Length: 610
Image 1 (cartoon, helix red, strand yellow):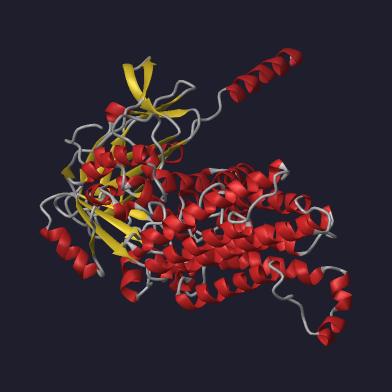
Image 2: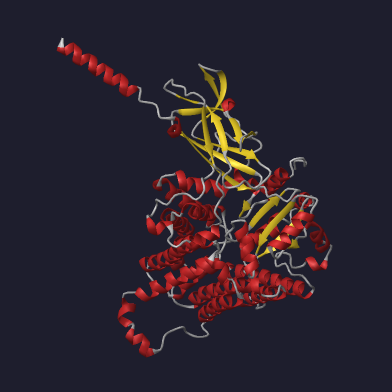
């Protein structure tokens, strides 16, 4: 009998373990609400694994009055209780339209019903939420003690992060919510998944114009060390450069999230850029052998011991990487914006900073490869060695001109590029006769020199004729200029929040607001590749086009960025004809023409599809 009783108890324990106790409704379905703007309330649910909510069972009341909501499509489900239904699993985001800014005490009452996969259904449940307003990003920098100092990783979220719906519909556009999605990845992901994901995103970003200017800087410095540099030495120098860049990127990103302003925006002025450009010019002249960059002899003697261990050069490369991160590549991209948004919302500087560090390491991996490879580009000492050094000297001069171009009158960069191309052609002996028995390589170099000579001449001629676009230097001579002027949309500048509000109120059409800066590489890319596309220009004709030029980083510029929670350009915002922003249509970073056309189509629902 005792054995039979023990066997029964064992079977009962196995049955109990196979059917665990269901969670209470408030734990199975965690709800939160936020009012991101004056046009809507966003209701978010986090649904535990093994549980689901019914789409048809939702009811909503706002301050005691029934209201409607925009429920996304759900998953098809054959239910034993209610028949064929649509359900939601994992996460859910619901938009509830409103026509005003709700007071802090506003109450949102939600009725819902869900079930568990183990066969248990909950009765209809009513909850009351008070929609929170997002805390302005810039205000986070004024807290007396940031959350990451009080307890790293445990700071409460200032606003709930929006969740993705189970399926995407035709009315949704995940691409426009990329930065929110990345912020959600940080909020809900595991560290071992987050760091490789951001490393991969950084690797993709390494091939954008934001990172490419760093290649000649690092490779030029490696080449400047001469033929005696070993592979390990080249790797150490390249790694020091990338680590300096990554640490600065992470620290500046955390600071930007707390202050609401990118540190690099403060450095984009003629004095800082001019000083850095002069440094690159000095390095280039040293490559040409005009003079040697070295310390006085007595300083060299004092530092000989540390130089023997190569510590000085490594430290110098780390400093150069830090400077490059702040000045050479101050681009706002979706991964960067998402990480900054997460830090600003939650105060979790450790996870956000690690994500930014991993992002920068991914961006720096090709730099390390190029830095190590640059050592193999060095031939044995002699005439070829001098030629390679001159090549990198020209790259450094091009980098210097690229840096100062945003703060110069448009004519001067055109003249500078033309002069640089002409000089490069001359160095490649484009105007020197070749001997009859010249080897093929010399003939190839002479051909390249002739191309550079012609390109430089075209650049100078176009600049003197009134052209200002280095990518189209001869447009001033033909009808192409007129066509380009017609194709290129014209923006009206707004310089303050007051000007913006006045233009929003006066516009009878939807409004597109473009945040722009002369030093923003992605802004230039949008201007030359996307806005100049005839299809995009035609579609943009249906909008009132406004542009906030934040090049000078004035208090008014910072107030405009702060108002919309932006850290810097590029950023494109859309407003309806009533002057209300459409947050789901925000675009951060560069968008190619096809994706931007899709965004424009959604901004004008009744418009034709391209």
